[in-house]
Figure (cartoon, rainbow, N blue to C red):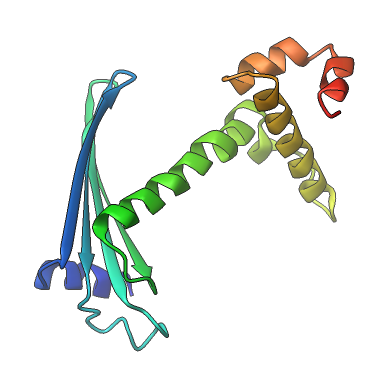
Length: 159
């Protein structure tokens, strides 16, 4: 499937293209979203498949150049701009929830591995992230340090 996606994006012309650039936080990034309606061998594997999407990202982060290409499939017939918003929305969730849970709250290194324990602790981490955001913390690490010995403040925020 992956090879078919790559081949389709090389063989056919996109029906839509959207580009955007961002600067900030000591980095620069440019994104190009290409949308294809030529499904080239992919449509027989997926029912209702309507679009192939190629997202190219390149830029400079920490003075190092990078280039990534991601491929998506969709049953939606959207514009490149709309797909760009969906992809960015996904990464927003990743950056605001999954990354803090893993990097700050060490979810991937958790020792709980059996039964319902991993899911229960994941919910506790979700609750903590939400409480920290509700209390106005923009950094989960700062919230963790500030609230470490203040369970009453955490519990009061639940009201």
